[in-house]
Image 1 (cartoon, rainbow, N blue to C red):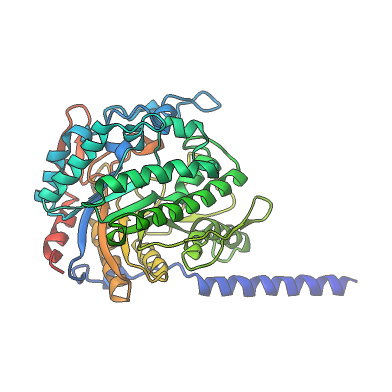
Image 2: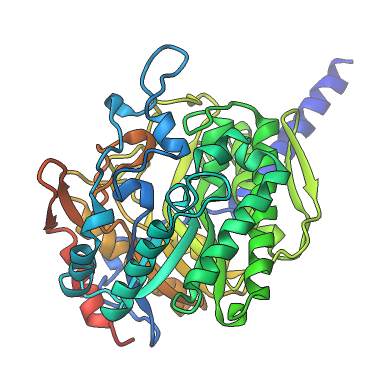
Length: 467
C-alpha cells in the first residue's frame, strides 16, 4: 500500500513539474538586457499619429450628474471615503472651458498631431431622452478647434462615466439598457461623424467591470463574480451593437470604429510554483484572452471554477482597429490582498511607479504582439507613468518607445500612440495623487507646466514626426 501511495505521489509531482516547465516555456516573462540596447534606435511608419489622451470626468470639471459624481460623495461599509483622502473631482483641470489653450499646448509645446478625448454622456443627455444642445455644441466646438489646429480627433464614447438616470436603471448590468447607449452613440455619430473618423466605443471594459462589480472600488461598488461576468458580456454586446449601428449610418463606411482593451499581463511571482501559475492563468483567461478571442471569431467565454461560467455567441464581433492601453504587468501570489492597499511585488532592479506596479517596457512589447494577432491596426490609446517626482518619466518614455518600435519592426501594425495623460487629472479612486500628466497642473491656480521628463517624448516626436 505504501508503495502505491508513494508511486502516485511521485507521478503527481512529476506531472506538476512537467506542467510548470511547459507553462514557463509557453508564457515567458520577457526581460531584455538594457545595457546592450541603444534607445535611440527607433523607427516608426509614415503617417504615424503622435498624440495624448484625456477623459472627460478626469479633466473637465463640473461633472455632477454621473455615476462617479455620486460615488465621490459616498463612503464604504466602514465609513471611509470612496476616493483617496476624501478628494472629489470638483473643478478638475477646468478643461471644459480651458480646452483652446490646452489644444494649443498640445500642438505647439508638444508637437503632437492627435488628441484622444471622451464625450461626457451625462452632459449631453442629462435626463433620459433629453439631449442638451449646448453640450452638443460644446463638443462640436472642441472638434472644430482641433481640426483648425491640424490635430486629428479620436473620440471615446464611454470612458467609465454615464448619466445617473442610466446608473439607476442598472447601467450595463442589464442587457435591455444597451438600447440607451446605442441611441446615444448614434446621435453622437450623426453630430460629429463628418469630422471625426476615429471612434472608440468603450474604454477598458475589463477594468470597468472588474473594479465596479468584482472588487467594488468603482461604482456601483459590487463584489460579485457572477454580476461581473454579466457586465463584461453586455459590454461586448454593446460594442458590437454600436459598431453595427455606426457602420449602417451615412458616412459610417468611412469611420474607423474600435474597442480600447487594457492589458495587464498576470505573471506568477514564483515561476516554479504551480499555485501561482494556476492563479495567473485563470486571471489571464478572464481579463485578457476572453475579449481577444471574441474578435477572432470565437464565443465569449469566461470560466473560473466555482465563480464564473460564461459562454455566449455574440453576433457582429467586429472592429476596425484595436486600441491598446498598457502600463505594466502584475506579479501575483495567492497570498496577495484582494482589496486596497495592494502590495507591489517587484523583481530585482525593477523601477516602481507611484501606483502599485513597476515599469515593464518588455510587457508593452508582449502586449503589442498579443493584440497584433488579431490582424487589425493598433492604436496605443494610453501609455504613461504616474511620477509625481518626475524622476522616472524620461526613462519610462524612452524604454517604452523602444519596445513599441521593436514590436513594429517585428510586424505589428501600430498606427499611432497616445500618451496618458496630457494633464495631471482626477485619477478615479486615487484622486489627485497620481501625477500622469505631460503637463503638471497646479489645481489651485490651474497653471500648466511642461514637465522636464515629458521632454523625452517631445524629442522623440520631433525626430520621428514624418515617419
